[in-house]
Image: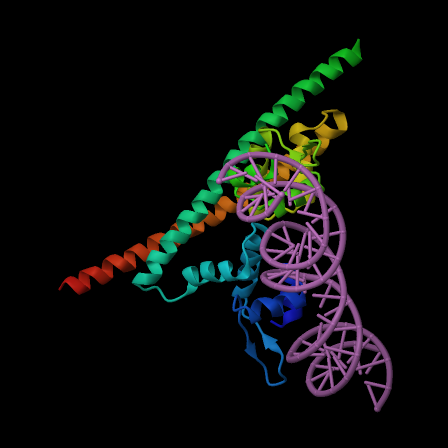
Length: 122
Length: 122
DNA sequence: ATTGACCCTGACATTAGTGTCATACTTTAC
DNA sequence: GTAAAGTATGACACTAATGTCAGGGTCAAT
């Protein structure tokens, strides 16, 4: 597919897609006319990139993750990916803690709400 | 405490702390000499800010969360926080999916590793 | 009292992702 | 075949967090 379709399917701007390619996060072949030609697999890949960007990773870090997932898998690589995986797990734990906090806040607010409605109803 | 100590306790630069204050994420009183005076509670608050920044939120979004946690709690507020909470939960779910992916990658790599060592040992 | 550490404000620089514009070629549609 | 839409490259702008520097106070220790 061409870059416009990839853009439509992912919501990423054409500009961003070119940037991702320039950063080595996605790749394409070139048609005779010079247009980029992307494989279908790039759709999921771009979505992954978007997710990680939203989690505060930069393109270099995302490239590391992608290389772990799709790259050559030798011994050094493995060690590195292990490390990456652990960092990622830490991040998940942090976010879970914050979720717990928000849950408590939510409950407190709901109590207040109930209180308010009881008084209002009188 | 003064800004330097808050910086030491949190790891945030003095520059960043002033920025957070300017954005309304933290607050301080002023001493007679013009120095900022922070309460102890700000330490935890700054750590929360750092966490959220690391998760890809900007200061405006973080302010919303902080206002939910510590602000006046009326009806509208509640509705808004509910929404926020849901967004947050979605983010957690996404990250959990990615963790699952990484787990699978890890396992595949470990298999490769084992294979390699078996051949090497011969 | 002077030095060094800390603080103030304000301004400019930097980084990374993205937007936008200019210029030019290709393709599609009428 | 001409217009409109799509694509290419390259350059510049913007945003947000943070770094850094300038110029100037405050305070504690020697």
